[in-house]
Image (cartoon, rainbow, N blue to C red):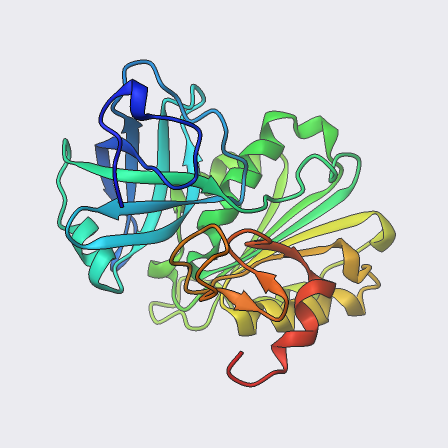
Length: 286
């Protein structure tokens, strides 16, 4: 994969990557960190990305990996990617230092329906690292909070120390978001709700299901059972949107590694309406 090294080479094409410099590296939870990336070309910003999209991050001599965008500075001069160290490429990225450079292709894929959610109640459901792709949607809602009705954010993790972005919680609550947390276990007896995220959904008082929009991101089993619980509240299936994760290698729908049924997660997703995904969850090994 060729990385462009001059403004003349930075053309509008999905096949070339731009060069970004690491401005900061922030540890989050075990084996998870956030990179703050600034484009190397002077004055260039990340104007084109939408909440829910992803970039391909490229380490020369190692390879590239699809990573969701987890936010940006208001100026969009710096973009955040929250990464779990789980493979060869993410291990190589974890070994980079502030000031190092890497290639970036994108942004790619579909986005969260923040615009169509205006005037609706909004429920956001995050499991584990799934909060990272949802974070830009949360920030987009907060930029025009009065345009949305009741906003509920449900976050689950295996334990309190694995809750992502805890420093944001007070600000989100102060901005009028009903934020609820649950963990699988609370070994230090800190008073957290114990249980899986769908249990939080079961306890919700959904007053206007026909005017409620939902965004879900997390492990597929969590998303499947969360969707089932939300449907029991009478929320239409077409109003549920999920961010899917697959082995995305090309990001433009050529390689087929990310295919689920007729959909290519890299270009048709990662954000898909529930009716487009649900028939294929029951197909073993798909």
